[in-house]
Length: 476
Image 1: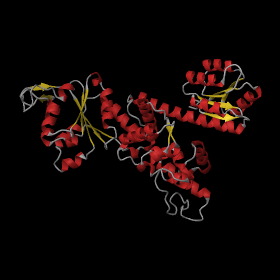
Image 2: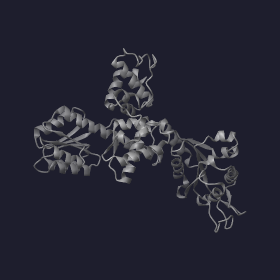
Image 3: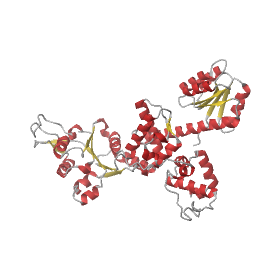
Image 4: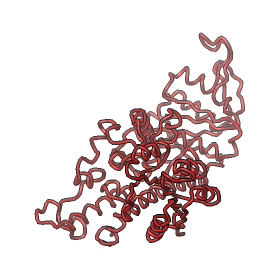
């Protein structure tokens, strides 16, 4: 469905300027409202949905600053561009500190006004699309803690929804930091067990004796130091879900006891002979290769098949780079509120570096990097300099690296892309080089044009125009 044109309110007490700007913006597809009265502008803001305001700062009735404040209060996502006269730079800077996006100076030039407005509209559209994607993930999948729009993550979330409200044990596989516990929580939250406890335990964090006591509980005097009875995690999770993280590190002696619990739905506390009935759904997770562990005798084969009734395999972050901008936005919002910092976005170069890095620590590492960058940034935008050295190392350093670095190397063998020439050919034309670079960025970004544009150091509008110009030579 085609999105409605952006609504722009033009406020200028000079009728000629107001009409001229309104007509100029309509020619680039905007829906324009204009007025020469700042008081009328306040009424329009109260009665109409407005995406962007272009207002003069100095007006006789109500100042442009008042219009700015009203716009930001009535429409939080609305951007405001202020118009300043000669010598009005200080006032324009004050307006930007109060929330204006930018300013233009008189005498007005139509092309400049159009360009500034178009840039803000593009920014609003990008933010709107990201919000819609977040909402789509939250509403369609019911998993507000999980961020993902890539095909791999959509497949994971569909599977989670399909099996959540069943009694099946689930094995979650994935590298460290991919969000295995978030998936376990989603399985619990989407099931009929959500009114009962979700209990998590790390099987790699304890020795045999302590882990057994934590899982099954113990009676008073069961061992030295057991001065009172203790309920284990299975009892605490009764009716709900028990998440066994890093189950691949569970000691062999406990693997047999866990298998018996899964088969009989009964536990026996350490130091007791009396079985206790429990109604618990088990969700397990590991970053190890359990099949290899079974072959080597380190993990029981019968337990392996018992816990993997359903397997959810989480992709590494480097396998779903499309999700990185969405994750960065989410972390900026969450961590900004936590630390009271105002950074709301990253520069194109920083975004390209974040998209290019391989993230061995996955989503957890990305979150830590964003948090550090947020803390060392004083402004509204995070630049490459705020990123760790290892992430900076893949950031664009010049025009050509900016086109190549964030993704796979551009192939130099002849005919690599449908007969396009090699880039090491000194006689290659600029158009041919451009086609190779665009094709490379699109292929490496799995067709994601936002990421490709960021890697190429150009706007999405420019990329769309180039794709239309070159056609199948870059998309085929």
